[in-house]
Image (spheres, rainbow over the protein chains, first blue to last red):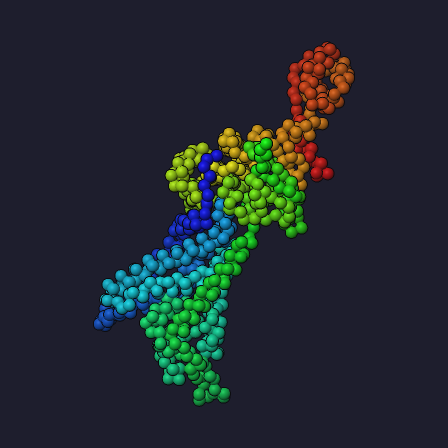
Length: 316
Length: 313
């Protein structure tokens, strides 16, 4: 027998990261998603000026094109989360590769958290690549961009927002040990939350329940609701990237959340909007950050517990 | 006096799946440098035992020590010193053979230079030198078994645990894997080796433990297990011309009972001694000519059938 080497938690952790990156980089669905996202982003960047040109409209530079990019649709984040993490834990159980992995001198804790950190870094890498592309594209098409120093903050926000959905996928995958259940189950959760939020918003207005739900969350308005809806945007976890940028740019801007009042017998009046609550931008952004971190932490801790308790009964 | 700590030591190790007891109060000792066969029919509890040894399953009760350390549960420090090949191993298909060994080597904190040297050696040893750069997804079942053996040796372990290393292979593959196991044995490592193939265990191991329905039926050396098979050791004689005189002469021998069929006499021996000369004299004395004399049974197969048969009853 040769020289015995001693493993440390750090070397084991780095080895798991390496193992995971090799896997992630070769997932066909990640490569496919990359291509799809690039096509969508390219169209988003190039199509408006092309249409303006075709219609004879004078091109107007948009200096906030890059910062506005971080206000993306939740389904985009959800799909990226699913593609990146649906196999992270469950795939190892499905293929049986968990057996040799867990008999190496790395603890279950190291394997689990190594995989989670690898997922986070993979998401960060995808978004970083995308953001560089968007920034270069926006500068070329829209001209000089404002607040580019805040792009890293938006990037972190976008990644944390995606981690909320990734955590839903991971917990379902860890418990079920099945990638399909992880993907379809989390889609069910996404659709369920979206529908419930829409129903609540229609019946009760932007109720405070929506402040603490994952996803789009409550819709805020920059004007008082009684004066009609002005500029609106989502204040939920999905929009964390944009909110963090606004936290720096406009921390004191007041955001209003509209309630719904239905007049009795309501022939003439019908549905009326009123300002049910107002918060500063800083409060809204920090709340979204806190809610994102709380969901991610709780879901991952439950997943971690389930993973630690798991036993490899079948060889698969 | 230096007393070597057993490499594997279990006391009343028990594991159940629901109401089914997979391993029942197993007390097993494997000393250093042994090549220890773990024998039992399919479903006997071999893989469950091995999974407890390597930390994939938690025992319900009993104690489990590997290399003198408590090994129940998730114990990476112990796994540093073990090499394990699972039954029908499955590895990430997207990795090449070289990458697999490299990434596992990193998990053992094997320095880069050592990995660069050891990986080609291991690939050569298991006959995959030309296929190291191919993805595992393209490997045949036999090649996956081979890379399974290679990864179990990447850390130059003190204890190698192989779970049915030749299961699912064609005869040529089985012989090749057996030769690889013999190669490991020459390296001086302790080998714990499960199989349901008696010939394989007989050829490779010096100690054997027989298990069935989760119960340990026997543990000891191959010689000891052969003694267990004493009642079934037979001597089969074919003579040129059978006669009553020959039959009577054989029946007169105190150490055997005789059955005859045409020109063949089967003596079931009650002794462990070599009695071929006595038998030969008895046949010659009765005017017979021996064409063939063959000893049958008395090996691992008979012992196994005896023990497992008794269990079944």
